Length: 473
Image 1 (spheres, rainbow, N blue to C red):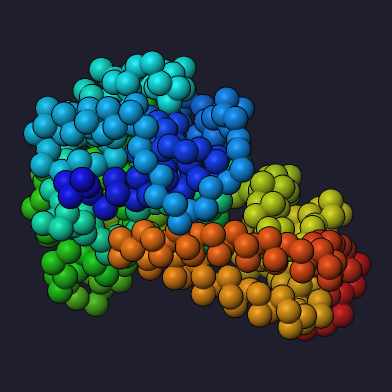
Image 2: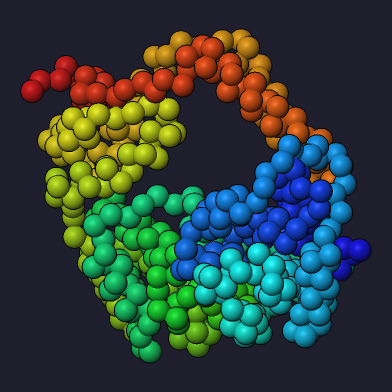
């Protein structure tokens, strides 16, 4: 039945079956299909839902609407409801309408919207997702051609890091106090001429964080329509040299790159040093990409490297506009630490006191010179969190064994899904739930869920170690 489905679409069906079993439903309903789509294709669902409300609120709405019964074991092969069967039929019709050979997650979304009276369609319409608008956007967007199996083929840009996707997946940290710089970058990207920003500032001033902030705004739908479908791809400067064909391929594949913004960190310094040494620097390929292939680029550099690069290679004067990144003061640094606090606490399993944050913002510049305030202050908190965590006693044998078992089960679950062995995947999914409950009980038994606190003394100890002399107030 699912021979024409892409890999992602098949996994949506698998996760829909899993969601139905967790609700104790005897059938796979359309709301389970929607939950499966939210799990599997974050890029698609964020594209249409992020600006209309949190995707997490959809899960809560479905849970509130559904009568939750006793869970059905995932070994049971739940059938599709009549409504759900119609959605799959509509999805196949939408693929035909768009001239697509294979049925993907985007066609499943259109199928849900066509089944107007179902609860999933009501949820989507409440958030402003309309059939005609989605259909039009998908019609305008280039559609990747899957391979014969039909697992989706690897994109041309597989060696690049997709920052926009990383933002969709929640992998990027928050950006604080850089709204002016972000607005300026967006303004330049929307220009007709010289539409490539170069962020000028000292190393560690937060230039890369601003680019990540742009990626997050795109993921959140908080950019002008001309940037709404852009993908920011991070590229190492070395990949634009004459010894590499990657950028040349990227330029030649014009149809696949119209919605791409390259991010090349520290490009001015790389080009300046290459010009001095007489080595190939790929400037010609890059210039062709920017001026003739229509690809946009964001780069970063310091004042000296930027000045040398513009003298050696007029490319920057022709193509780039400067955005100067001001350094943070102590108050700005504290705001950055407050924004990053939760991520550090989650990683280390600790809590930071307010006094620790204030001390880090103040002492990073006074006692630990050499880097801009936010970077050194974050490093200080990170090191203190690690120090406190290492002081804790080794994990009990029972918990260590349970964690190893959990990793093995998760690995086997992922392999089963990747190999389309869905019966095995259901079994391992049940085992994962059991092991999580076992771990929770063990942690309660050994009182390991009580977070350790990181205070002033811990930060002072780190300062003393780094500075190689006892801390003196």
